[in-house]
Length: 444
Image: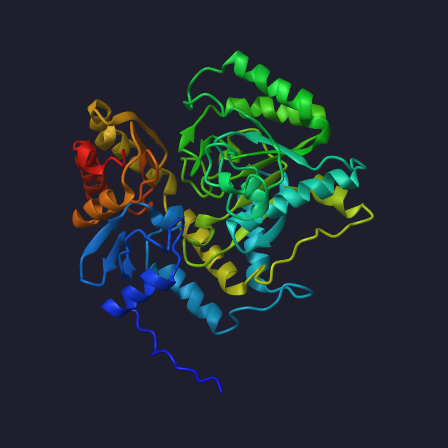
């Protein structure tokens, strides 16, 4: 007969050595081996722009918890929204049912995104929203009678998520999913645009885009990209005018244009959405900051034309439906997060962060281990000559009272919009100090 040992009630304020040992042996953390896992740091509370460790130390957060906690932590307005919704319902299936939080969120998203994007699919994670966008594009082509158009065009260097469809349009050579090359569908890639958001357009690069479409458009459903900023694929900034050329090519060859704004949306670059200042896409994906980091939620928006074309097909239903689609609790917090963003002068906040990042990170350009320093909106990036030893440099950052998680050759900052000047100055100072002693932190 099986016997069960019940766990002790979970407490959020303490964590024991036994808990940490269990974590190390049993819990997989992102991109980490269970055989020799990277160190983990026990966080028991968070407020404002600080994470509190179990030993009482507080760390200034430079990551916004992977770019989603734009308002910081323990935010009264978001706490209140969650508590009010809990008294009504935390979840209900979205099949055959609707509810006020989902309607309110969809209305808000239609209001604040580019005007052509009128239809909203609520997904449960950023990666799933990209899956939905890709399936939407394929169903669109099917509805048009283009039955062989099931490939995608995209830039090298991109990152769109860890589920199968998004993995297949991530960088196939230098990306983090190379291991799955034989399993993933194959798509068509072009070199990423030249670096620099203000760099003049390269005519030879424009010709390479022309050649990509000429060769592969007939078998492709859409062009998908992160507009202006490639995030986890390398923190690569490029001139938005390249997207004007891509838009023209998509129109000429009958492809849809998909923007993945999961990382760039909700003000991170200085624009509310990059799609409001670049060529307008047919499909847009949003996530991360959508709920201010409180709950997992994402959205895929499309134009009336895309939705109506699919709806007029012999397969009129969009063939996707996550269990937690339109989760009321997440939708309520998302509405509160958007309202909070608009209640503040978020543009001034992001502009101030950008100016301070420019000033405080500038000295890194003169350091031997640094090859580039770049800033866009509330994003600051230092690129190093050699990959950093993540475990060693992470320990240094924690000892210095900051939370920064580099990857590869990139030490970057994406702080909450509510960060103080003093907190941002300390984050940058610690980064500069780390880059001043390359022998201590290089993985080479």
